[in-house]
Image (spheres, rainbow, N blue to C red):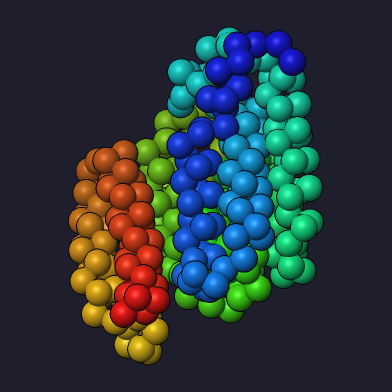
Length: 279
């Protein structure tokens, strides 16, 4: 592979990839607490980081023409990484991630296979299709928690967090499409905001996000977590609602605020589990 070495790392969006690994770690911890199998959870976290990086790299490979308009600062459009180099880099990362995933319990292996297929299908089949691409990304985002729970043999305990994360991610992806309307339209993509208009797309995002916000107290109401969870998740909910309101005029700012709200919501689950373990 030719190109600047650091640019290959940049292709993986290392911050986002590591963040995905942290979400897998959170999923395992929430499901099993201190009883989690360290080796299985570690393999799942590393597999998530590598697979997410691979997905980002292959996305840049397929999106290289769109990125000349929307993201000219990325490694391929600015000329630091050749397209074929990005593709080979992605394949290598996927291979190592799969090798790690096959050491995990059967449910975790199934999730890993579905996610691998989803990452490839997104860029080749679903990106730019109204709603479908957003829904697939939402599943992939939420599945990091589910994968962590499955890695420690307790997939069922990750379902609620998976659902909340998927709904929030769907909303954020729609808002990102609103931000990228110009470049997507120039490339001939038919995203939800292009197909329905920005205002109607934002309404759909709002429905998904509000569903997540309304469902967020469920772990408290069912007695899974105590008051400490509620004290953190409520500010997260308020931040995400504020992000939604901000998105109508400033979708770029709105989707960033929403990301912070999602991380705060994940922190609420950690606080909830810690209070149970040490309470």
